[in-house]
Length: 396
Image (cartoon, rainbow, N blue to C red; front, side, top):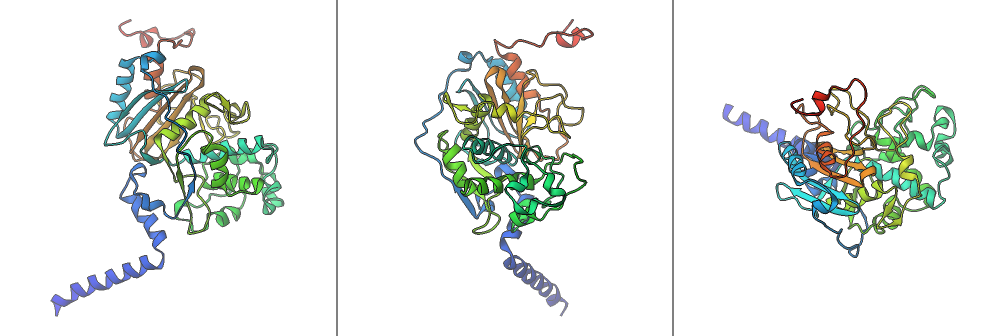
């Protein structure tokens, strides 16, 4: 009899698991798979159902040149490769002045590899707000959210502006702790209450980007994916990309979960480094990317869904300031980074598989500083009184 008890228990447990999974397979798929994979290596099935951002096959390849022609130092690039290679990297791509000047890949990755870069997707909402302003669908970032969402016209939420959403200072109570698990993310975000009125607190909320996507749909009369496709993705020659839906026929996620090619993120990088131009053509309102660098009221290191390259405090991801003072960046899953240096026309994409809770010696300024300081046309910041020159010049 005892021999039959244990198999019976296993059979019952298996039955319970099957019934539980069958009751909501989408929820359990998205709950379990992140414990087995890092975001950049997540199976494509995790993001299904999806909605396509239609691209083009006619965009042409981005021109490639030798790094020396862009005044980049091969030794400095190799040092950046060595640093990245020791820290779970999949790719390191460097662009300058519209050219791809350097590439290095690990573990079978390539320029055409499709990845999900987490919060990179939220930056697209800021770009699309600028596009909607260019199309005269949205007037000002200072206007209240209630101009587009009726339920935000009364109470404490009436004071929330589009800029508050762009800077993650809306003051809304925290959205879904795991937005990938939400079955109706639009409804959850629309139902959020407001905290203390007009007390600005910075917090990266999935719902801030989600509400921006909802506003873009309201303002343009188009599905978000369709507007991104026609006004951004196709014009820059990007290939098809895919947004994860909260459920079949539901809303696309705007704060994460966009599957796109590495090469197409380099196209977005060119837009950011040139203040909205691609291939010499102005795609975004002139000055819009500069507007995205306006520091948030409650976090001077954060702009319109981008991180500003201000000195990081010890223990917060970097041990020294960026060598180029105008550096800003996108932060994605697995410590994936897209650094933008407008003064040098320089863009750097590093794709990683690090667990974001890693306590390794990752330094957000290491890779860009190696590349920037190695450039033949880099001009160091003027030394200031009190600088310890022995730190600047080895053996002195």
